[in-house]
Image 1 (tube, rainbow, N blue to C red):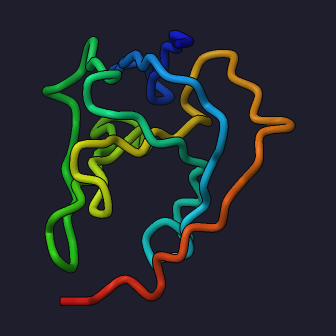
Image 2: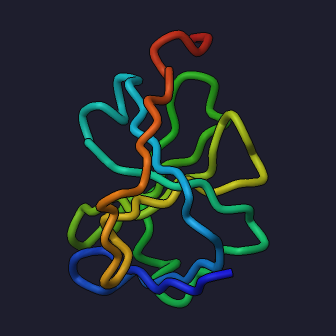
Length: 117
């Protein structure tokens, strides 16, 4: 497993993950398409919040299962708890220090057709 550190833009929220990133996803739901994040999935056992829990803002919509977190200082979206896999985090790889997504396959995630409450 590879260890990565990440943060929001201002550094108030810091986290680390341990995983092998073999696939990235771009979701086409109304929220993800507007924030344009490039994501990888990480099991909750491979995620650790290092700093900034008090700086995280939570956004939930539709079913309220997914929990999208944003830095309340700089507004960057570093990660969320997934609706489709509640024991996983979706990590915005653009927030990982020194990570280069070049050459990693990107899968289109079909969020538009997920049920709406």
